[in-house]
Image (cartoon, rainbow, N blue to C red; front, side, top):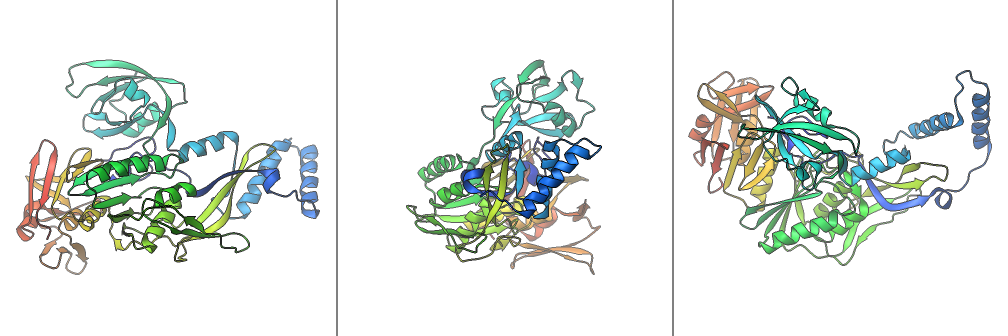
Length: 495
């Protein structure tokens, strides 16, 4: 099952697992906001004169009757487009406010995430301190109608779109509790919803988990509080999840780095003149616990700054896939004549001078797939015994619950689970043999092989699944069962 929300921008389980993260412009920002007159000299010369001359002629003579503002906007867009830099942008006042909200992990809405099953659309999560929570909505309630329109024939995307609207506007919902005994009508006023920038879990045995969704101005405060709470439980190993974190403020990345690095260089930055202006870390604390990073193709910008530094100082191993590769920094200029200009003014490099832009950060251990990545990180962190439950809209690993799930096939009384997930559980690797038309999983001690079309292998949408009893016959450390919460897989004593 795929859980979707207003900001769902990916396919598959990871979109649901993304900790309600909001996709933002991939960027690393300095925190300064410059005045255009203070930071940019006034240019004069033949080029400027020519622009003004063309503007005057078009405004006075072209039959389209374009206004000065329309022509100047087009000129600005043309100048920016000529740079072929997706990170240099002009913002109107409204655009600028939306950008700040995105970096701050805020949006206008009622604050729920939705799931869908054979019975229709239901609430998967109610965001804390949201309009929906204040109206008493809770997880598991079904959305029967939106503004009087029944949802029976609507997809989860249709319902999500119907819930959207301007801040201050209202939406009427008819909802039904999980027991399906009664319904109620709610009128909810849309408001700013603050999505969590840091989420924590505890796996037990001294292993903690922190997911950082954006480098907003308040992210370090939340990070510090969550980290302290884990340390009070006896933190020996931390999994730091930077997957889908697309950036934010450089200063915030520097503040968070202080929890791991006592002193040193966070990053090297070079401006248009090639001058190296390193960002330094001072007054930090060396981490006294093991650190494992989770990264993926949407780990970008400020996330790559932090990941690169933790790698270079030997503090953390990165697990996942190669990161986005956005290694440039922007400043924002407030224009005297209206609007804002976000300009790429520096390229940054890791403390060891590794290039990031268009290259990314390469993980120490490459793992595809969100659940396999999490499992591998937990193994590296010291979790030998694994307890995974695959529910309708959650995955629970060693007692820690995460929103989202992936498909499990039930066929002929048998249960099939994705091969990559099973391989991760036994610390193994999958391999497809095209000549033999077979799939294998091996971890050095045990070897499973099954042919496509056999009773032990199933294929769906290009994904390979393995029947659990057939897999258990080879990997005897695996046990499994089914209950009301879903399919439970247990691995004891590691390999």
